[in-house]
Amino acid sequence: MLPDDNRAHRRRALLIAVIAGVIVFILWNSPQLSQAVLYPFRLFVTYVHEAGHGTMALLTGGRFLGFEIFANGAGQALTAGGSRLLILPAGYLGAALFGAVLFYLTNTVRYSRSIAVALGIGLLIFSAYFGRFSITALVVGAAFGAVLIVIGWKANRDITILVLNMLAILTGLNAVLDLFFLIGNSGAVLGDVRNDAAAFAAEVFPLIPGAVWALVWALLAVAMLGVSIWYSVIRPMRRIRRI
Image (cartoon, rainbow, N blue to C red; front, top):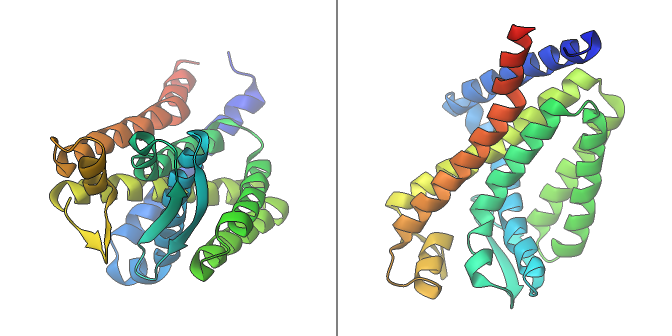
């Protein structure tokens, strides 16, 4: 059996996760609200997306030169070397993984305020080092980093859990929806920059269309989010009901 305090904490965390999901659903389905409220989160998703490309470049022996975020929510990572096989999918899958891991940690670890502060500090450092060539990237990373530090430091635990859950849901959900958009728009470009699925098809597996790769990545992203929800929400709820 779970100790009473741990069981109570888990119930409270689950309730807040549900509230966060409802808030996101309302925002997502209210055009007037979504344009104003969700726009900064759209930029943050792009930030995480481009950070995924750059991080994978570093992990595969390449270099991450920096990244840009454009006002319309698109972005571009500047990398050199590394494995294109892994770098190109790492944008969308990295954003989905970020959302899944953050959601899991927020709803299973008791130290949510420490998570917020650590994430905020990480964003400030990452932005200062890799986002310095793009004013938008620097502002987005610094703003979200500062807000998370303040929330983790000053806000109570419930508010912190709510904010982290909303950030995780919006990031993971945006990544999945963007991938499903690419399935039907795999030839879309931003200026001279192709989207990741089209670039992957052209550079890595030219015999398979970009739409197919977008579908594969979308399914992987959904799987990651599903695993996170199962282990952080559904499984604990089933255990609580049996106690």
